[in-house]
Image (cartoon, rainbow, N blue to C red; front, side, top):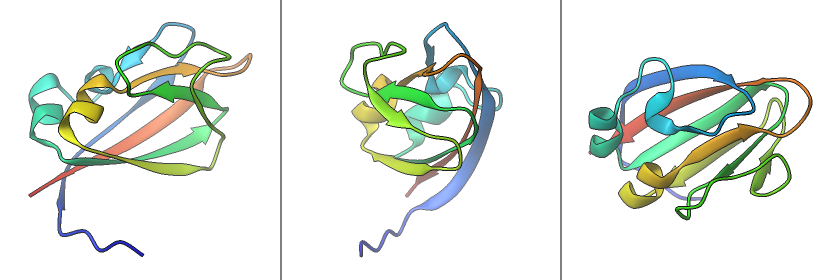
Length: 102
């Protein structure tokens, strides 16, 4: 089990639909806040989404799959800057993100 010493400092949440959105596009977040973060905790409340953080956009069928009520973490400033979401099914998903930093 990893032990992290980061502190939560920002929260964002939004619906994820058929248009790719970046982490900074979520309500409550911005490019400036994302640039300060070292790590993000991501949960999906409703309906699955796909995400990528390698610099390319996800599609409804390509990217990491995150089902409703699942959680993941993304670590690294460049990974967070590259993070993109899109819905994976026929209905929008709701993503919530807490940013953490030193």
